[in-house]
Amino acid sequence: MPDPGAPRIFFIVAMAVLATLVAFLVFALMARFVFHGPVNAKTLAGSVADESGSTSDLLGLGPRCRERSALRWSCSVLDQEGSGEVAYRVEVEPDSSCWSGRLKYQSGFMPRRIDGCVPLWDWSLFDLVA
Image (cartoon, rainbow, N blue to C red; front, top):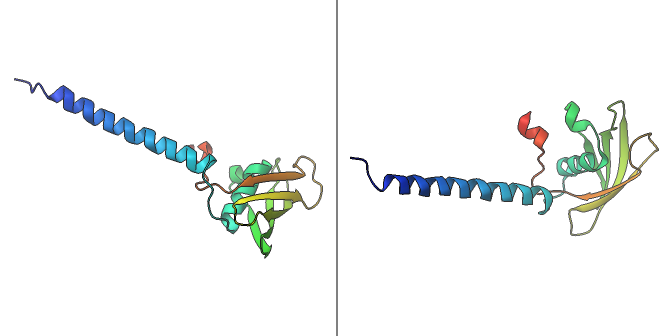
């Protein structure tokens, strides 16, 4: 004879799994688009690449940033066509992970000014399927 409580247990387990998945999804979205993370060469380079529209991530060639002085960085990324490298002067706001950048020299299709914030968790859908 089947256990009459089995459907109820299955429902509770299914709801717990669903709640866990929803909680993870909410955290992932908040960590990517709302919560800001620490600024270092790697995280700032990723953020500059994202905001500039660089093809660095698509081609697997990582962007680079070097700290020039307190709150001032120089970041190099591939251009949007993947044909060359461009550099941005980046200034990080004090006590923040937000920054603004200016193109060091004019390049055809790259934005002259960019700004953004370093996310707590820098992921993209491309990362998930690659």
